Image 1 (cartoon, rainbow, N blue to C red):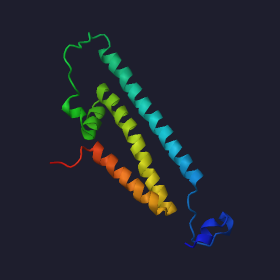
Image 2 (image 1 turned 30 degrees about the vertical axis):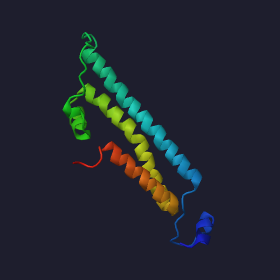
Image 3 (image 1 turned 90 degrees about the vertical axis):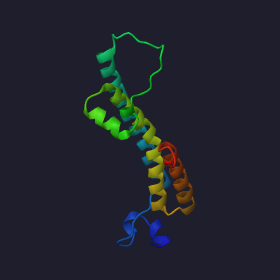
Length: 143
C-alpha cells in the first residue's frame, strides 16, 4: 500500500487498500484490554475466594508450617483441570494467572498493532520484550 492511500480519508481510499490503526485506536484497544483483563481476573479471584471461605471459612488456621500450593496448582493445565473439578483454591489461582497474563496480552496486542502499523523499530523492541516476558514466566530454558 502506498503512503498516500494510507492517509486518504476512508471514503477516498483505493479499492482493496486497508487502513492502518492510528495511535489513538491502539491506545484505546490496549487500555480496554488491560481494563477488561483486570476486571475478569478480579471477578474470578473473588468468586474463588467466596467459595473457598464457604468451604473452609470456619476451619482453624495454622500458620506454624508454611505449605505452598500443591503440585497440581503449579501449572496452567493443572489449574484448569482443578477448576473444572470445582476446587475453589484453583479458581483463586486462575484469577491470579489471568491477572499475570493481562499485561503479557497487552504486549502481544501491541506487537500486532505495531505490525499492522509497520513500525519496524517498535516491532523489534516489542518482540524482545515479549520474548523476555515469556522466557521469565516459563522458567527459562529447560535443562
